[in-house]
Length: 363
Ligand code: KG4
Ligand code: ZN
Image 1 (cartoon, helix red, strand yellow):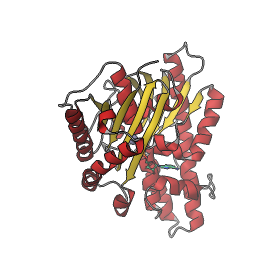
Image 2 (cartoon, rainbow, N blue to C red):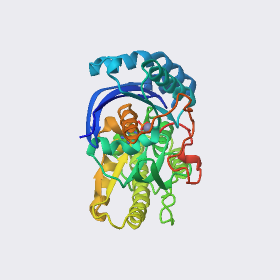
Image 3 (cartoon, rainbow, N blue to C red):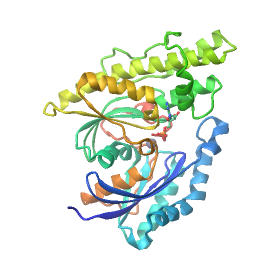
């Protein structure tokens, strides 16, 4: 068995300040010693979205205390930490700088290795921590800032198969909620309202359905929702339920179409794999109706579905510590000059798209 290491992880790329300590010995052989997440939801809610300046200030205000809490809950002193990993991007630059600078100070003062981690890679590697998933696997990342289909081929080897060309899926949920007068974040509200609505009431568009690629587009859908709501204004509770149900139906229909293509592509890229795996991560993965749809598709296509626990699907520092561990295990460490990046694509060879990091931040 590989040597076990205590890794401190720090995550500050968007609106969650998070610190965690893991004790890892190998693939799927991980103990989460602490996992502290402080959400800034209340600070941003009045604005209906994340305000970068407010986020950066909140990270600075809470980081020290949060790292201390992570160590206390792990019952460890700083001297027991073997390496420190922090998100170095992509994200809102003020927040990324706050977390990375804190990690650099810790690395320097304790003389331990620093790992500057790509936040998206944290999401991409999570199923290896939770389920011991072996490479390669297909990843659907659906969050407030990113919507991507990625073939995760190895550590540091990511092939983007598809991406949104405009809004991220979580963003589409949030905007739909906002225009219907529902609270932020909108995803859970839309899902709740949809449960009692008629999915066939409104014939919303299925953007890019049938297109010969694996890309997504959600901005036209949002416009169609706005138009429908304006036409029947003032909207009743029942109207909202019908709009939300019809919106979700359109989303799932498109998603299934795009995903089926990506599965085919993935299988062509990896013909030797007989039990291919689909991993779904990001905040939108919490949507039960979505997981039901994906489970059905996986049943048809022979893919095994892995959905990491919700806490590890949304932004957290455990995934950053794990990604740090994975890289450190291969001998990588980063210098104290490691840059903070607002943009940092997983697949550097893929064409830059507005939607593969529009807010430059959330994933
Ligand atoms: O990954 P995440 O927690 O944060 C970042 O984007 O970084 O994702 C948050 C997004 C929000 O847009 C939220 O509305 C969406 O995930 N979301 C959902 C649900 N729960 C959260 N979308 C649809 N259905 C849900 N149940
Ligand atoms: Zn994220």
